[in-house]
Image 1 (spheres, rainbow, N blue to C red):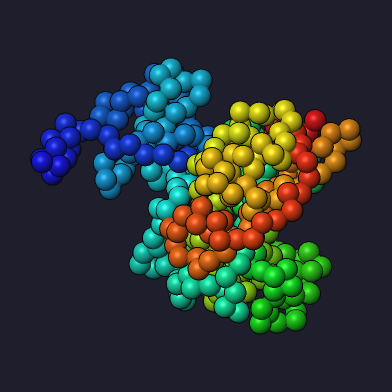
Image 2: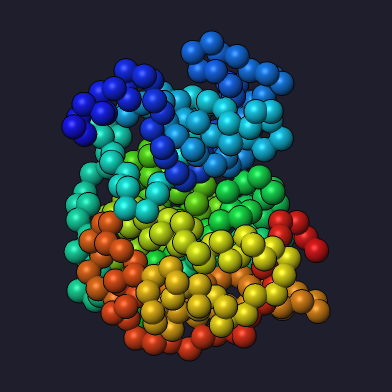
Length: 330
């Protein structure tokens, strides 16, 4: 019966529901009707702008149905090749053919066999108030993905001194002296590289090279596996009540207690006690700049973050809370 229903839906041209965000890499038309190629209002998606994904036109999609704010109607079809859909929790990035990097993609724990980690996710508008000269902060806009989603800072194998595993002295010196642009280019698939550039704005300042050299080398032999897992864990946070709490309180104070309660709702009772909140002073304001999630367990791709948090030790809550900053220097 399910197969017959699927066939009927396919013949009827039914769209397939989808979630996540589509980030445009170039200017492309946004059609109301995919078949007729109509575009009332002459609407186009813009580079580096994020659009909520609603559906795709078929299994092997050629177009995504996205929501374009201000357009009438707001639901528009955009060509898949125009940008990148940020990976959604438990949905793997699958490199193929020549695009796939060399190396082991298994996620069997870090290089030392340790199974404890900290996932650091930034609230980029708050971070940028403290680092306005950063390229990724100078280019941030209200329509970019990091305006209303958490961004990847890093995935850190524990304990804290578990860093720079088998890294040549020269590379460590470059990292510590902040010459990150001189660190080696990472061997990443095109899909992973493109996704990372959107979910980790710090790539504009070569943060991804630094994080790999300092922390990723203690995770395992493959930068591809390290960042695929990091992207997947971040996606689970961005699809949760935690992100909803932040977006629902833009410009307002949110307490650490409220944040921990949101984690409990999203990932199970006690999850919030595995989270530390990082704040920074900005004049008379206290801003939330980062959340640090403590995890424990073998990082098998797609494993629910709830299980990893449930196995971790309880941690200090960090600051008492702060303002969820909006894009732009205040």
